[in-house]
View 1 (cartoon, one colour):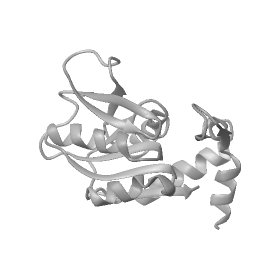
View 2 (cartoon, one colour):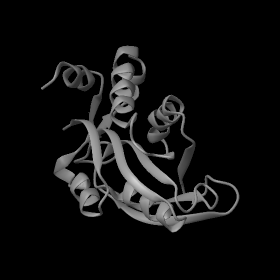
View 3 (cartoon, one colour):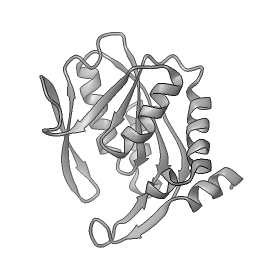
View 4 (cartoon, helix red, strand yellow):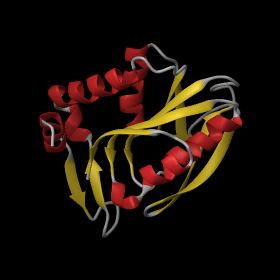
Length: 177
């Protein structure tokens, strides 16, 4: 394991049995209190996508907003907010998906992107892949091409990255548990 991976893992807290029994939640809040860890994340993702042909960054509510907004700024790309149901004003499209512990619905504003846009989806982690797949469905309905999915954490036992790759969405993550 690379030093940066070890350092990042030390900055992420495992919370057992949250939000329900049997689930180990990977809490990235401590990462944001550690400037070195945040720099490692941002620098690694920016370096990976610096030469990519993306036109937009889409980030998922809520922890994905934290990294997505920084990447949007650093890569000088517009930011698309993919929100939980009922959080966006104006006209929206909605998509329901399954979580590892339930279901949820995400939405995006109808004018968030258009035909020909190339969108990278960013979230804090990939578990089952459901939220990113739902976001990709919404973006594709608006005419955009989904160029990939980026996250800090991959939980490979939950098969999300595999599901995304099967849906022809390239995946890039920094660490796995």
